Length: 248
Ligand SMILES: [Cu+2]
Image 1 (cartoon, rainbow, N blue to C red):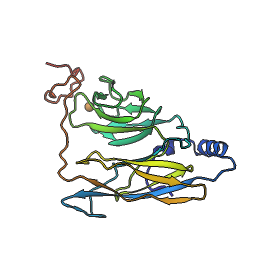
Image 2: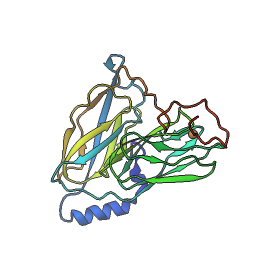
Image 3: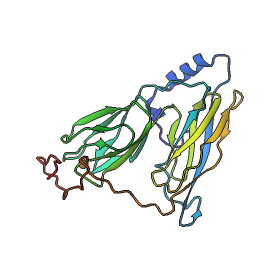
Image 4: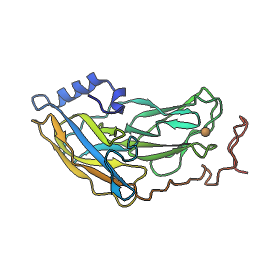
C-alpha cells in the first residue's frame, strides 16, 4: 500500500524490480520502511492535531560502503496554476527533469538563486512549458519573478528512496534493498537545529522495518520573505503580458 504519492510512481516498477533482482540475485529481497514524524508547535508535540505535514520530505541515504540502487531517469511536473506552484514541495532523484507547465492565462517565470541548483527560466506565456534537469542533490527554492507569493521547493536527493509524508506525519518507503542508511528529513517550517540523522539497517531477512520516530520543531516559524531574481524588492504586481519583470 502506498501512503502518499512519491516520485517512484513516475518510474517503471518493473525496471526497479529487475534492477534489484540482478544486483541482489541470491541475496534477500527488499523491505518497506515505515515511519512517523511529529512536529512541535505551540509548545508541544501534538500528534494527530498538528499542522498538515504533507510537505515534509523523508529520504534514506545509503551509508558509506552500502550497496546502492541506481536512480532511474524520470520526468515530473511542477504545475503553475492559479498563481501557485503545485505541488509546493517536490522530491526527486538526481538526474530527474522537471517540467514547469504554465496553465494560467498570464505569464509566469521560475527561477532559483538560493543554494541548490541555480536556474532561470525567464518569463514564458500561457500554455507553454519550460524544463530543468537537476544534476546534483540539494534544496532548490523556486520562485516566480513577477508573483512574490509563488514559491516551491524541490528536494533533490542522491538516492531512489525519497518520499513525502502524509498529512499526519506517517510515511512509507518501499523496495529498499538490504544495507545501512541514514534517515533525513526536510521541513520548510523547521526551526532550530536539525538532529543528526538516525541510522536504519535493512537486513536480507527484513520485509518491514520500523524507522525511529522523527521529531521536528516548527516552534516560532516565520515564513521567509525573498527578493526577485535581481535581488530587489518585487515591484507592484502586474499581469500585463508585456511586463518583463525588469528592474525599474
Ligand atoms: Cu508568476
